[in-house]
Length: 342
Image (cartoon, rainbow, N blue to C red; front, side, top):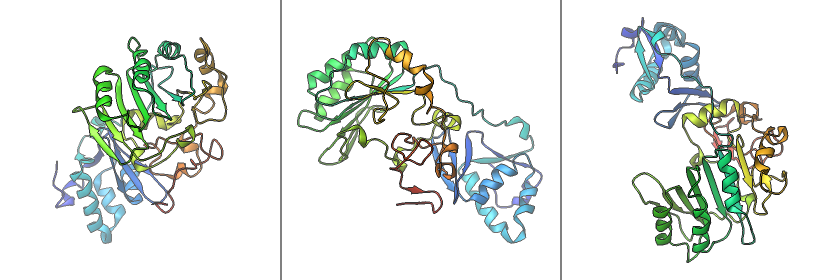
């Protein structure tokens, strides 16, 4: 990595942004997302301009653009970018093409949410079979109560011969939902990628294995589908899959299916609109309908306020808890015009 003590020595070189590091402009400030390290940093909008509008041009043009009076600030920017390994200098920019941001998926459905309350009577074996036919790789089982331990095991056993790769469990805290039992679930069912225990007396996060899953005890109450839709920094995900999908599709609803506590098929269990009761063959028919796919292509560049937000390609969004399909999520408290959380 070149030293930046004297910027003049790079005048005839090209400033190259690593292809996995992508600037995103917001109204008040911008971000630069590192899709390889899965992190991001804030940058001023003037730096976004430098990194995008001067792409493919020699560094001396940037120096001229900034003017003599701003050389110290430019030096600070370049030092920051090189120290963080966002940029480098080269004589051969043609050897460093931009990353392809096209998004493709082999899955007809990429994720499913299945809600349970104490009176739910889902046919889990049939549900798993139908999701498996659609090559769904990830399922979230969201319990608004504390299921009996044996019942949880019975449900998880239904996934054993499926192609579903990961299962996220959300359970309500009780004396029977204890750490020992949760560890047994993880050991016995390798598909369980994470367990969130809600309504816990206190927050506690346990990394049970060196990689996954994590067990999170959290104080947040999740007692109905209406608890969905919170937007916060902790929910943001910086990765190439979400970033590329968000370019043209909804990061909330694209290729998602929800089964609410009463067994109704929805885009998301929180939605007021349903596509009828789940039954054999239902998912394959519903998912191909234009009405069901209507919300899939609403990306953040189409959403009021969100289109001016620097987080728009790393935010998991909520297209259901909103005034209308093109409005900002009601539970999002971030204002991109002041760059503040309320």
